[in-house]
Image 1: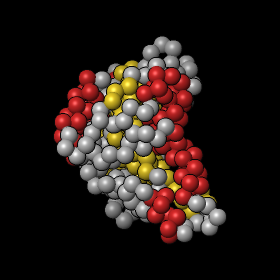
Image 2: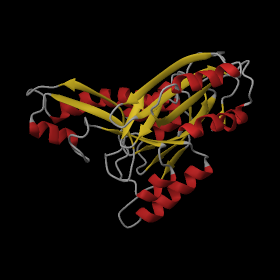
Image 3: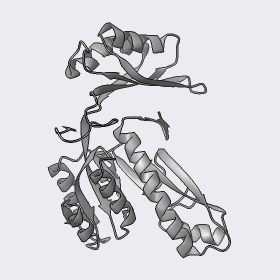
Length: 299
């Protein structure tokens, strides 16, 4: 992660907002866990700005997200987790700490569809996305001019069945060279193998043009039209080795009717895809997503 520069707004707030720490905790449910974490922040002079928790009653698992100001806090950033671990480890809790002024260096992978790429680049330019789009990577050259309009480096990495291993190697080299923290599949119409997924586990967000788990694969609008559905949707999820099976971050739907052809479904779906992807990306960047098995909690 790269810390935000002087002229950019800190993540999760407007320009000039004080930096905060985000503590996320998961562990077996028991009495007093909220008090344990709140007491830790209080004892070190912290001021909690947001706190949310959830208990999965069936699994007996407790989840919490606590955000607090760093200004006036008695521990340095590198000291927070080491000091917290002796408190939470005996309780079986796993904790991680993130900071609101960290900016994820992001790579956007695309094919030929431009709508999600335009939307992400525009949102970043307007200060709505606290991410640094380090590069755009495509398996076709069609969208190079879009990246150029926003002065973002564009990399064309063509791929065929025969060259997939070589192309994914080049992709991994590029992501490492660009120090990429987050990968966004903005209608990237290629299936990533476990080689890429495992290297960036939990840090690849995909937008699928369907309300998963319905209509998997590459032609969901055609499937939806053939089925005569009355709602179509879009789903943003973390990519896993299982196609379109990763933990879901955000979804939405729009009504359609028998009067809508495939082209109408595609047009309506595009608007939905941009909004759902942006919401999911924002939730990830603000450290509001907790993954538990095949599911997510989005605080």
